[in-house]
Amino acid sequence: MTGETMTMLEVELRSLQRKAAKGDVTASRHLTSLCAEAGFGISQTAAGVLVVPGVIDLDKWSAAATQQQAKFRSAAGKEGQEDD
Image (tube, rainbow, N blue to C red; front, side, top):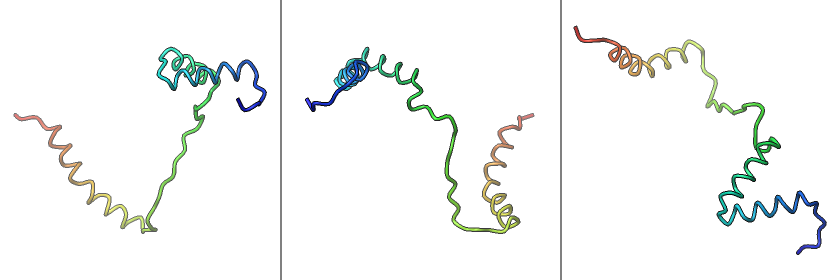
């Protein structure tokens, strides 16, 4: 015991956490349900980072992208063709 004061809700949540950590599936499901209801762990917006190695001219980039993607586009075109 740490001597800290807790509400009954905190006691219940800690109890559920301990039981879930020990492998109690019912406690785990109940804790997950409570967290979902509270909105815990749910991101409202998607975010990310695009790392770009350097600046390149748009025409050079387009040519490089076309060259890199050519093998995939030609393979996709072959898959769409049917034998006569």
